[in-house]
Image 1: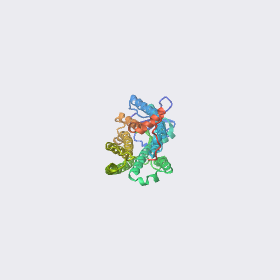
Image 2: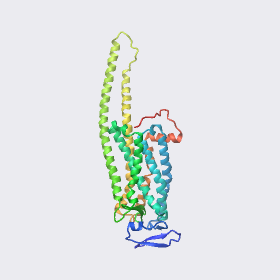
Image 3: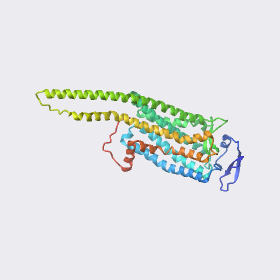
Image 4: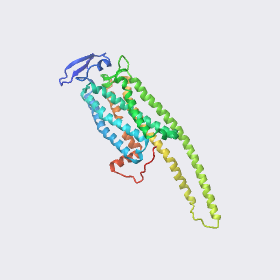
Length: 389
């Protein structure tokens, strides 16, 4: 790239320079030009090996991400212990959003790295950021919906079944998608920014119009609002769980004490009576095992909810980690100074669409069993369809 021009090359194979823009041209100036018959040259000072690496990562993530998310959705939906679970619907919604991202966004991103520019026309240049950002919003909102679901289940169990009925669940899923796309409506109709090509970022994105763009607002809303919701839900859940654990321990002690006293009184009565009882009382040595069994049942459901919460928190944390490098690149404006960081920032964002199935496998025994059930046609004899949780 020359010092004073952004080169715009005709996509005819001869690399003939047909248009040029001043270096101080705004995003809107470039974005308003027709990109259908030409391609804006990008990454001119980036090593070819680095761009090839970026393209290869996009292709691999797309090849891995599409089947892994499809398989995850099918496996989770078919497994009896999960298919009636409310959170399963939000997880499947997350899989669909990630699958769409891998199937649409990643191939176009790979092409941009390989061609050093956008060659896919104006319509796709508008659709690309629309799908990319709305998918990110759907993913975040699905994770937030799960956190709220667990919060209501643990902190407000009396209203849980009224809220999470089938028709309300369908409405929640629809609202997540509608809300995600509505966030991109202002730039789509060009009332607050616009969707187009940004030569500085090397991709089709949200551009400024008259110095105004909703990108900062969307970033703050997505991450700050989401973080506040997570912090509130998890802090309330933490205190409620701690309080419940103390109550459970106290209840267990009282229950065990009453059980032990009743057995002692009954045993003494039968021993002093003149007839032999037909009921066989538990031996003293069996009482500890009875305690252990009762304690296990009382702790099982609480432990299951906590494990699910941990998994959802890790999904959210990995989402933040994947978007953090590119955020720092944009804030510090080091795209041209450190090309490697810029390319890696893109790859980390794309990685966010493929990493969730790995989290499911590593952190949830039930999800592992769901995959095993799908792959091996394995039927668990102890499977029973539980109610909504």
